[in-house]
Image 1 (cartoon, rainbow, N blue to C red):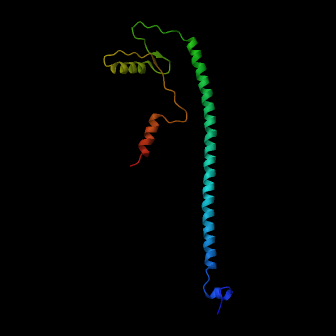
Image 2 (cartoon, rainbow, N blue to C red; image 1 turned 120 degrees about the vertical axis):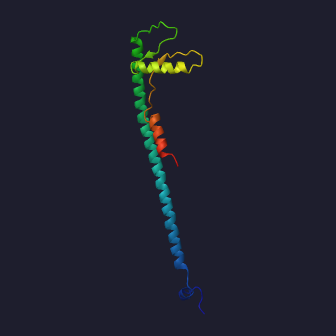
Image 3 (tube, one colour; image 1 turned 45 degrees about the horizontal axis):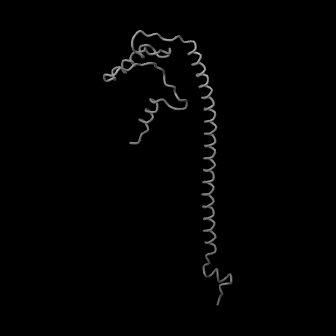
Length: 150
């Protein structure tokens, strides 16, 4: 009778050593593949966060320089500007030179029409500062309309 310790007995009994080693090899390859994929994804996340931080720092320094330049220009304009004299009881809107007078008149008329019996006066009309790196409201609305889910 053949014992289980002999090689011939294991071959006759249909040993599963070969299939166990194939299964173990497949498990090791699968686990290492999954591990490599997640490590690479983690590295990509770190790289993109680093790029985001670098670009944010660059744009914020440019914005600070631009804001300082605009601030110094506005202080220079305030020193050289003459005070506006108005003959009516409500102060006239101040034109900063970038918005036409017709537009200021239309804005003042719209504010007066929404007054509900109260008297409002437009003191100053100026363009809103556009934030760099962001879309205008019209562009954002267009993108929303074209990409919204069904």
